[in-house]
Image (cartoon, rainbow, N blue to C red; front, side, top):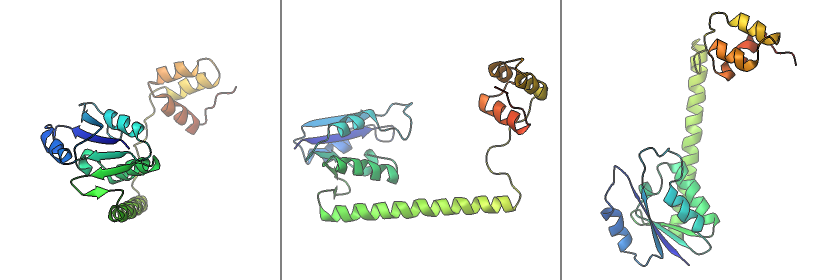
Length: 194
């Protein structure tokens, strides 16, 4: 059994003291990972140090964090990460929330969190679908605004359809993205014969 500690620092919590003081109450870590959030880090990506520690987890290992907010930013993310840890036959402990996947209480809490997240996701989905339905009934457009057709677009499409110019040339001349060009050409009935 290996005991890992994980600390995540960012602009909101740049000092290691709060998390370290919680982790110090446990002590005896085999390895401590400290994450310093990079300013250009993409959201939804697992931070580098957390990735490292999660890849090391094996049967019987323990991963300690100071609190949930230092481990994830969303409920779905929390559920996925804890499930992955459990799939490695390891356990997760958050000290501030007194959450320990080895205890029956925390197992029940985790089931409840999963159920509430599913309920929340389904409710949001229903609200979104209802909003789209109402918007359509009101005659409002849903999605991105349509791409306008540039001047001379039909001539460009004719030349492309007849093979006088390549698709790359047609896209460049129309000053459109490739997806938009082919979609608009298709809507107007232009198709390249192969």
